[in-house]
Image 1 (cartoon, rainbow over the protein chains, first blue to last red):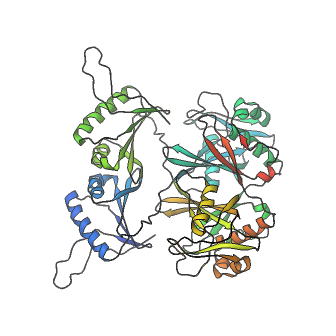
Image 2: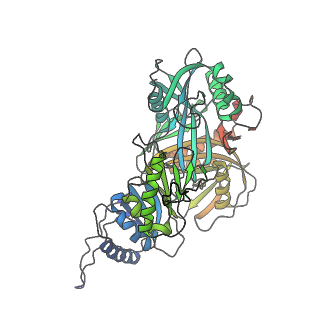
Image 3: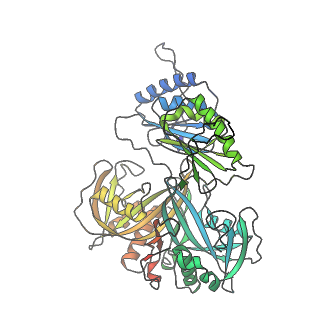
Length: 288
Length: 288
């Protein structure tokens, strides 16, 4: 997303001493990105920051992004006191941002959702793969639930479903469809959750449960899952059973992933849709 | 998510001077949350922080969360130097976290996705509601696209679709279905995107375009949208046309939202599924 243009080596003009600036790259939206890597005294940083902002203002730059690795935490206070605001943080860095123009700030929003998956895996005996967790809401309750997990950063939903089933139970499975998804809010501080209910077809059947998170794992007859009190009272448990049963009877069409690419950057992504009714669009890998 | 238990008013026992601690609430996962609100000198904060961590360690606490409003940026460096790591940030605060036990850190992941919507709105003349944007990738290209936008924090996908259509074009519309969704990665630094293609039914027809972001808006015959070069080359444009057309012909079943509640906290959320094939589950508001 950035174009490498190092502005720290400014040419001296008219005999005026060149001013040292922070190393920055331009982004495609008229802004600049400063990716600080080396340790620096706060006072020296402040001098460079002020000179840089002046220069970028003259150049008509818009958003100024400063990425500070956690090792450079000594520069955070200085940056904020110069008018920067936090944008987002990951364990190892903090991203701050400043909007130069007088016009309305059009800075993009921060990530707002965490994404999880639940995997319905049913064998030929109409037994569902279920687990008991060592922590979380169902810990110690005796409740059997489908394998669930968080989609890793940069991971595709269908791959996360296959990975979580393998990790928690040792079962290899093939992804079939997203049967439903749930959006819920304020699940973690102010953030929201998208939870994708996925149908998978098992390829192996011998369970090897994970020790860290899983108390027990087994193949459970659908009737037994249905008879659990939690299935009667908890909508998601009930829908998981209903959707899985409908899918097994082939009466339910969920969404399955289709590989597409973007004309802009050749990046691959997946479009999830009802493919039963998209047969007319035959090619599985459409350029875009 | 937190239980209010202020640990700063510790009772003096055995004649020992009570130690002042940071005000904290317990969370349901065996950790504590410190929500700093008042200004404090870094040195005083450090004293309280060290005493608090010692106390929490004795109590067997796990994760320690410290939320620092941006006004308390003077405490960030101290917190990091005591071993805390960034967890996430919003413009007005920074969340830091520390894992006390020797065991594996089971802290929840940060939000990883931004969520967007695109709205297909077609009138009775088989004309689609399209816009030209003042900024972004299609700025100045003459490309007509469906209204799109970002789902606000805490906003439901179907409400975001209705809102964006109203904001950009002045058209009131009723949400019908999610026809497809796309997951793409590294769209903004390391974050991913989920983009939901939504079908809406227009309730009004007189366009009043928004000035800030929209260059032009109109009802465009589907054939004209199909004839745009971008529709030939860009998979998402093509699928939007195909999916919208299939939906108009009633041959395509997408996902529509069903209101459900959680037994745990009575919170409402929406489950999006293929309702055409879920008629057997009749009640629209299922307790869970």
